[in-house]
Image (cartoon, rainbow, N blue to C red; front, side, top):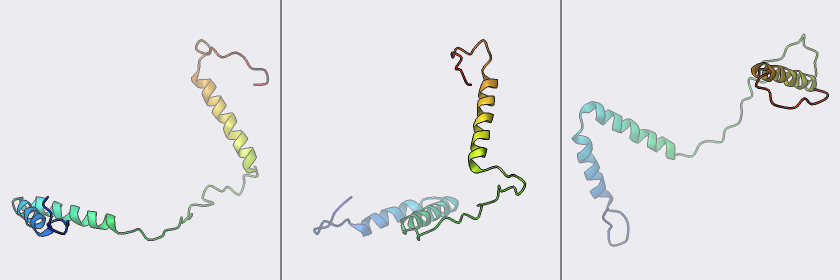
Length: 101
């Protein structure tokens, strides 16, 4: 890219070169170039401050389940242990037996 005497880019030269390239494309590709340019412009704008919605909170709540969150965690860990033990056959299991498990 060429620079002018003050160090800035010669924007007009770049723009005319880009315009020539775009004009040489078929109409459908020109449309894609326009869409891409618009998406680049959209990506440059700072995002507005957003907050988490949390509209999903409570969706898994079951009024008939009286377990505490700690009890649920323990139940999940037990299920994971069962699944892990089912995946390893006795022939493949080379871990020593641990008392209390």
